[in-house]
Picture 1 (tube, helix red, strand yellow):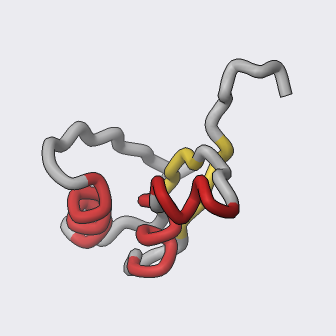
Picture 2: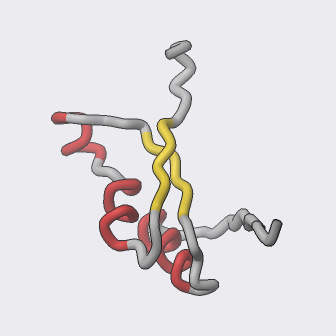
Length: 71
């Protein structure tokens, strides 16, 4: 149906590499997992997913990572 997906493996700072990869082939969509941290945990750990959502040149779909807790 004209849909394709491509997985990339890159080395470097996650935010920088994700944004660079989204710009290179002019991606239509970025899919990224997030731990869903809030509050102080978010402040201290930061959020690569949040930074990518704010700076990406295309839509970003965030998917909550499975933490193994059976949620």
